[in-house]
Amino acid sequence: MFEPGASFKDNLQQLPAIDGIERIDLVDAAGSVVDSIENRPGKQGSLAVYQYLQQRFGTLDARAAELGMAVFGEHTEDARSRPGAHPNIDRLLAIAAGGAPLAIEVIAAS
Image (cartoon, rainbow, N blue to C red; front, side):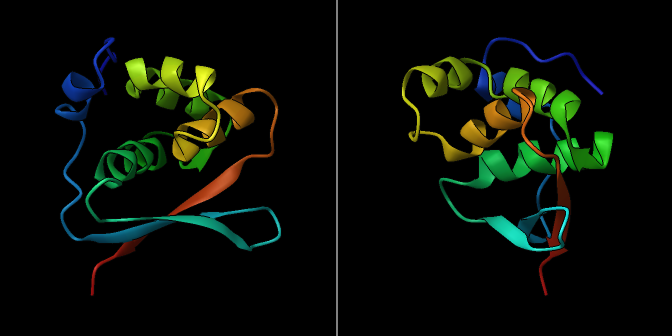
């Protein structure tokens, strides 16, 4: 557990490694996968944040979303001013604002 600072790059260095993860699936209350975050360039920061939220909270609820937004640091403010530019932060904003929680399923690489 750590206290996120203002810099996403600095926060990212504090998160657990994502080696061995293929993707993270986000699952709604009906059991449907509503989105996935793959372990590929451009998504690995989000993958690390969501993995941390899963380890810390077990689910993506309002409390986890608030911490996730803090971990994303300066990118959260950018997401607020440019909806759609950061879909993995947009999801956190929606859940923090009262959206339905999601299960976070970490899928190991085969």
